[in-house]
Image (cartoon, rainbow, N blue to C red; front, side, top):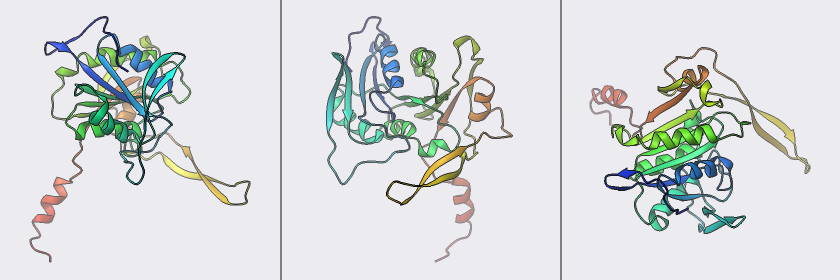
Length: 266
């Protein structure tokens, strides 16, 4: 989605470029609300899956071709729809769609939370992680209410936040943002957090499909009982926006240091 700038933001002497993606699909209300909020302050490009790809993490399409489609609805160009994963969308956008390298990548606004263990599975986070892999400061943003249909507060927050993003230290290129489904005046503020280690997944519902085969449907999400206020769960439970810096390097350096003291074991 390339657009005319009405109120330009000076970013190192020029208008900033923002690439937007998600895992809910290009037709989702969240991504369209985000694009609408940002298009008056930046050059915005939208490249997102044609269909919902929740839970895709940072997966890539390898054994089949990926197609790009210009998506138009009611005469309005929405962006580029891609029949691949969220990470595919970022890779293709950087390879062939974006006219200039983005200053920032924003993935979202996701429907539902991407906190605690959900970070590992989230296609929303996966798209942002792909941006970080390519050296671009990237943000995954989620509205934590599954049934909350008003994305305006979240979109307005991201519009304000991205204009201050240049102040954030480059120690991390990947940030995970969760916004409670509240009115603007009900949100108490922003809290910088670490990810809760709580696992939400309990079990599966089991049934029999029309063909007599067993099926399993992931179900029964539960809320944590005891949470630290400085975790993403804790911030959200107290009506704060949670922002968590994430690392792409998964090396456990403490364990590595201890293991190296063992000397040769082979």
